[in-house]
Image 1 (tube, helix red, strand yellow):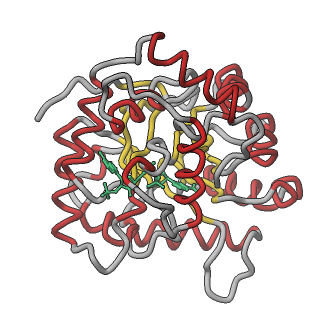
Image 2 (image 1 turned 180 degrees about the horizontal axis):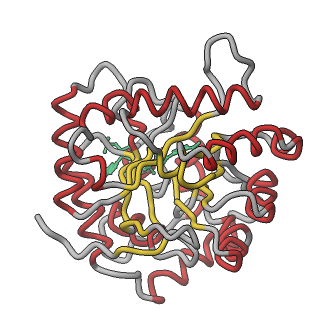
Length: 297
Ligand SMILES: NC(=O)c1ccc[n+]([C@@H]2O[C@H](COP(=O)([O-])OP(=O)(O)OC[C@H]3O[C@@H](n4cnc5c(N)ncnc54)[C@H](OP(=O)(O)O)[C@@H]3O)[C@@H](O)[C@H]2O)c1
């Protein structure tokens, strides 16, 4: 099972992460059992995955990870996202961050969370300062190791330049190339770690016809417009390698409930960067047809 998964510094945080992280957005629903999560996490650790990302809004994902990580918490850099959904507390306020951190600590059954992202927090809220101050207080209190931001477009650009965050999370994929010439080089210059979300572009090649979910439908439409040639590679391997080796990306967060799919991504990354003969037409297709596509939140 062992594959040569690279480990990389996470910006200037002092943490290191495997180039492949487990996106735990698909293990929060009723179709998933605790035993499924144990198996998925077991496979992740065997593969050398040392990064797991969840969020308050991913159903029972945090609780299940908390249970499954008992006894192996130190094996992973644990990341979550919050800012909303605390009963009786208005979203995107200082108290929603502080109570959100306390709730996440409890659900994840840990004493410290490595990365806490403000989850799609609008730019105006960031600029007000209150939520950033509350997150920094959680860091000073030893509840959170690194303050992080997750989002897109002008809010992401603001977050990268603000100096307030050690890590940002944004969409990077075949159908999400806008950040390659914007937020990513800026983050790299500033020592901000970057986690690539939706790295497979929601795997749009799976669908013959327009999928129902609006975010996946948008990816599918973009994929149709780009008319990419997989150059003889499997789409999943091509997509994983594209995102994982995009300059500035510290790690990709593949969203999966399937140990087999996680292993496919790990093996693809172990193959290394795509050769220029494959990469150049992908960038050219985006330059031709994808200019101005906004970042998919
Ligand atoms: N901050 C945010 O607002 C935000 C938003 C979106 C995502 N994220 C983060 O990024 C992670 C990934 O995002 P995502 O799940 O939206 O997108 P993604 O990783 O690009 O795509 C995941 C989809 O592809 C499927 N898949 C995975 N490997 C496959 C393979 N080898 N062949 C075919 N299908 C495959 C998965 O289904 P299976 O379960 O069947 O593998 C799932 O439906 C999330 O878990 C989360 O951590 C964050």
